[in-house]
Length: 275
Image (tube, rainbow, N blue to C red):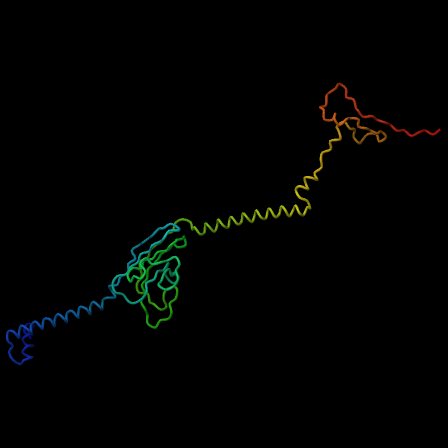
């Protein structure tokens, strides 16, 4: 049977009589609508079957460079229909990768740029440090029914569905926290050294049993009573010497003379001779 005779055959089959022109037009219109409906359902089935293939995860940044202390922005978005499951951020790859952000958990320095969005999963990392350098990936997971609790590195409960190409992050400059800690440690060390030196000084003074003022008071004064002209101790022990110089004359400058005269008197004591 030819396709163009289908409406006529269907209409005649319903009444058992040869259809009129009006009945023929009505049957033809109904037949075309039925064909359009069938074609539409077939198209929807094909679209639904290929929906998972149309899902795309976009991570456009290849590399990002920031200075220490600045805020790092990592971009990630999804398009199309995908399976139920979370999107997470990781640093590194393989079994040793580190979880950077997820909807569940505490991540003090990491926040979402569009909180609550189902398509934009961009994150911001504040107060970056040199330790934050590395490769970051945005990963889409698929829920697995009957799975256990999630772990920190990925998902015991979820199966990895799609991963981004990765963004290489470089952090330049010194870590402000490390510099502050080093400066504080240096200051404490200097104060400790000063304290030890002061304590040692007073300990030594106390052990000697005298203070600085006492030490000055015990310093002997030079002997000014003896003059250069006083005879030495290697003279005759039987001779007694007496200093006849006046103290006032000691302060006068010494004048040279042709002949020096001693102002000492010598007395020789001899024993008496018995008669």
